[in-house]
Length: 334
Ligand code: NAD
Ligand code: UDP
Image 1 (cartoon, rainbow, N blue to C red):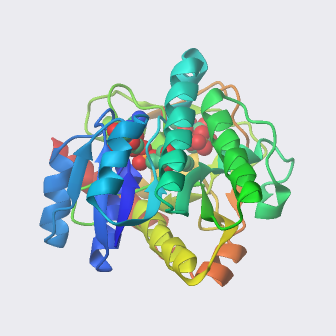
Image 2: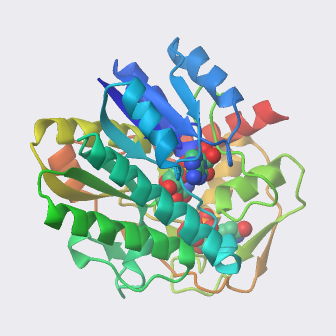
């Protein structure tokens, strides 16, 4: 019995595949390498001693997905495949609606056809919109999303709720990630976006390696401890372990629709990240304060009580680990 991991060579998917293999699970990956490289498979093999079977397919193709289900005994699916760049989604909304929505719906249809009903979905804190309080609790439900990427996440959550309502033999877990950063401690897996990064840690990485001159800090006049935006950063390996726990939970349940925040519950400011990065890696990060980025909130973080209690999951790594491991991976790319 195998776990199908779509998007399993991407940033979060690859770390999750490692944790699943370490737990002795059989893993099948489906990825079209639109945002990842085949070398990730070598890294997974070096770390775990196992090379998962990979299908180089577009997960919007029902025919290709059906082949995977015909050739393997798939018991559960973790769905990471999708596009994730917020700014690009504003410019190219149809690209995002097409890939993220068709991929999810096609996958669910194929699962239904093969009577495989255990499904874990990568959602995001962005679905809360702007609830007016910094601590996000699952019960708050979805707010108004601020970009097409976020809207695809909210729509897929709704699709999953509708699906479960129509047939409550489904066993679904929605995981709402906060801000994943960091890399595998081996330095062999991490995040390596194409082009100029949008997110904070990948951008800092390019400054640290001299590829970009300085970090632009988007505003220092927020109502936060130092005026810069605060987020709940969590280590990608902790996040990956959250998926293993979520799978354990679904294995124990006959059916259900479960929703969990995955974060640390502790927000850090942009300046906290910059100064910690400088300290643990002994590298100066030049920065300039520039105007706020449209759509950014001052501060938000996860209430993780539900994941702690029901999944037995807690993030163990701190921001020093996140900053050190991120740089350790980036250095290997030089
Ligand atoms: P990623 O881009 O590194 O990984 C996604 C993978 O999916 C890539 O390997 C890509 O090649 C593949 N892919 C995309 N479309 C595909 C398709 N149609 N068919 C087959 N493969 C396809 O992204 P990530 O950071 O690992 O994110 C994984 C998931 O988690 C995404 O759904 C993302 O939206 C979600 N998420 C990410 C973050 C974050 O900050 N990284 C936060 C919240 C949620
Ligand atoms: N940020 C910044 N400069 C950058 C990228 C991000 O100052 O080049 C800030 C951003 O305003 C926010 C935090 O860093 O306060 C995290 O942003 P990121 O894009 O990584 O994640 P988000 O929370 O927006 O999903």
